[in-house]
Image 1 (cartoon, rainbow, N blue to C red):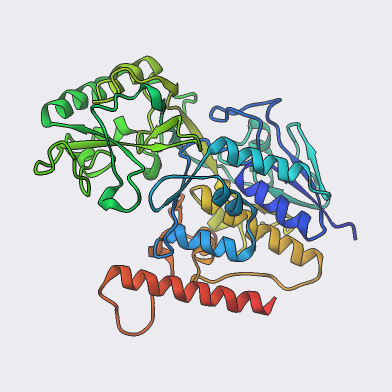
Image 2 (spheres, rainbow, N blue to C red):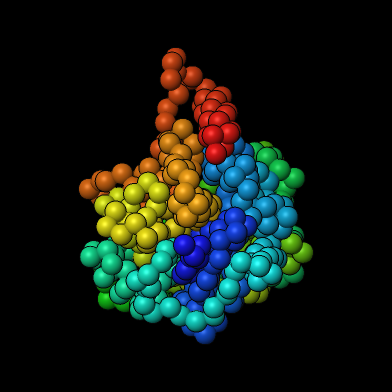
Length: 436
C-alpha cells in the first residue's frame, strides 16, 4: 500500500498535518492555491498566514488556550515551536511576528523530503486514497461545492473580521502609556486613554460610520469572538466599556488616582516593534471611515494605517453530524477534515485538529490503533465538542467550560481549580503517549 496523503490547504491545520505526516515517513501532496488565487483576507502566499490577530492567546496552562498549546508542545507541534521562536512581547499571551512565523513554516515544509508542494487550486476532491481537507474558513467556491457533494449537506457559515494594524512611529507617545493589564507582563501594550467626552464623541461617530457592503447576499451571522467593534457598539453605549475598551486593570501614570473612562489597547504585531494592532477592533467600516473614526482615539490622530480592518465570510461544515472523533467522515473514512472548516474556532484549535487528523491518518496507514483523546484534555474536549451530535452547532474555540470537570469536592478558587484541570490534562496526555 502506497503511504501517500493529499492535503488541501496550507493554513495552520494543513501545515501542521503535513509536517506530522512527513516526519512519520508518509508522502504528502500539499495543495495551496495562493498566490495563483487569493482569498478576501490573505495577503501573502506563505503557509500558516495569520489573517486576523497575531496573538495565539494566553500561554498560562490555567487558561484553555494555554493548556492546548502545552498539549501541542508535548505532541511535538511544529507550529507551536515556530510560534515560540517568533514570539513578540504581549504579556502572558503568545503573540508572534506574523511574517517571521509564516516564513519559517513555509521554509520548513518546502525543505522536507516527503512533502510535494503543488501551487494550484484543487477543484475536485480525489476519489482514490486518503484526503485531508484543511481548506479553511475561506474555502474557494470550487472546493466548497465539492464538500457539499461529498457531505450531502449545506454549509453553515458566519462572518469574521480582522483589526487594523498601525505603524508604531505614527502614534503620539505623549498621549498614550505602556502597561499590561493588572501588570501581568512588562508593559508591552500601548494604552490610548479616553475621558467620558472623548468616548461619547468616538462612540457616536462609530455607530453612525458607513460600513462596507458584504460580498454575498446571504444572511449575516457574526461569531461572537470576532464581532466587529461597530456591531458590538450597537448593543448599547456602555457595551464597549466592558469589552475592548474596558479600563479595568490599568493605571494611567499621568493621573494614577483617576480611572480612565475607556482605554483602547494596541499590541505589538511584529518582532521589531514597528507595527501594532488594535486589540478587539475587528471592523467592517469602509477604509476611509476607519481612518476618520479611529483617528479620534487619543494618540492615533495621525496614525498611519498599514492595514485596514476587513470582514469576510467564514465557512464550516456541520461536523457534529458528519465527523467521527478521528476527524474523518462517517460516510467516507478516507476523507478527513481539520481546521476552522470543522467549526473549531481559532488558531490553536486549527493546529490541534491538524495534529490529531494527521496522527490518526498515520496510525491507520501503519496499522496502529486510533489515537483519540477524551475531554480531560483541551484538545480532546474541543474534538468531542465538534463531533458529538447537537441540534444548534456554532464554532467554538479552546474553552475551560467544555473540559471535563474535576471529580470530588468542588474547588471554589477559580485559578486553583483551573490549575488542577491543567495538571490532570497533562498527566493524562503523558499517560496516553506512553501507550503509543
